[in-house]
Length: 235
Image 1 (cartoon, rainbow, N blue to C red):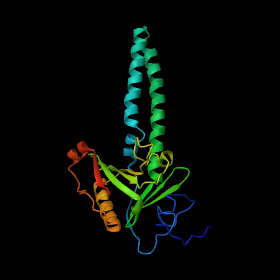
Image 2: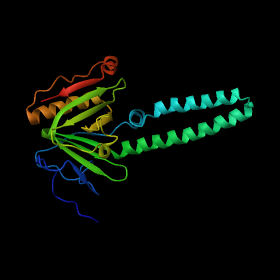
Image 3: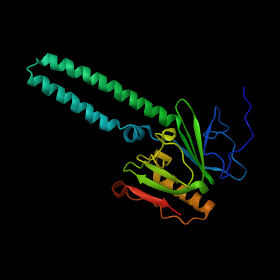
Image 4: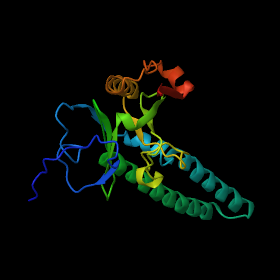
């Protein structure tokens, strides 16, 4: 049985952002927190939202439905019997269901294995289905943050890293802002009650860094869904 190490997570600006580990000193954390630091919030992605937004399951349902319909139409144009069209469509439906089921299961695993932690000094992302990685991001190494709020209350919180700090896009995926391959932005993805989490993050960030933050009060569901990306901070 391995002994728990007594070292703590570094806040040194020169410390690496990523760490591979085999055990946790505390839930979601590879090391004990330093004295004076405390966990303000922990959570995981909503797996249904992750399946919809990162794995595009809903779009694939439409795609496979169109394929089945096209197949039936082409077979009908060729004079195929009803039984032949039914069997062909059934095979396509079974294959599509297997693919969608596999993607949904992968999304569930990705959400279950991920733990996002916000302390009064940093954001920590513990992610990875097979290989567990922890990304330790002190507030002073975050240049800006954002909030994309959806009508169901879930949302994404992308974190723009300070100049000189880069984490590979593939190391983060799916916990990364889409279409930012050149400058990947770690993202707390599909977080339940995202507006409250964003408010907590902005307050902790302001207290630690002294940066004046924009108002992150929760918007009404409809207008928030329509407005899309809301800035939390900048410096």
